[in-house]
Length: 126
Image (cartoon, rainbow, N blue to C red; front, side, top):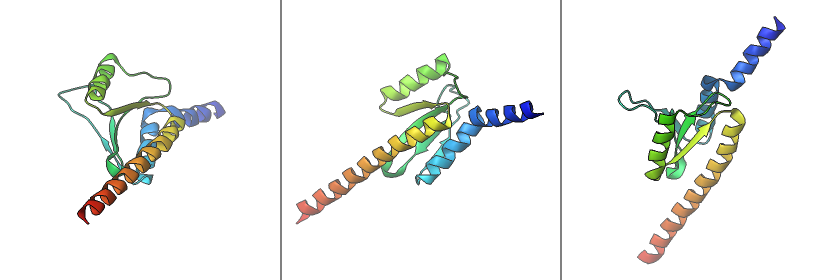
């Protein structure tokens, strides 16, 4: 019985579904929204689009711990990157935590940039 409980606990830490729930929670905590993306006609695109404050948008491919994207997913990721989009593959809660820190820096840079752009416009108007 103890072993099956350990397996359940372990699975909850590494399953794609649990990792996805954690991502959504973390994005919401940052003031963003995390949309589920699916397109029946075009497979291989990332699972989620994290839309964060100040125009920061990231496509997120979620995987169970240690799993890698399929060939079509890699092609779709490259397609998005070629268009200038940010794409990340996440397979664990600690990796999500690392990305939240990085995203926080991107948001702060965008906020400062937006603030200085607004200030420059006010100065020019004088």
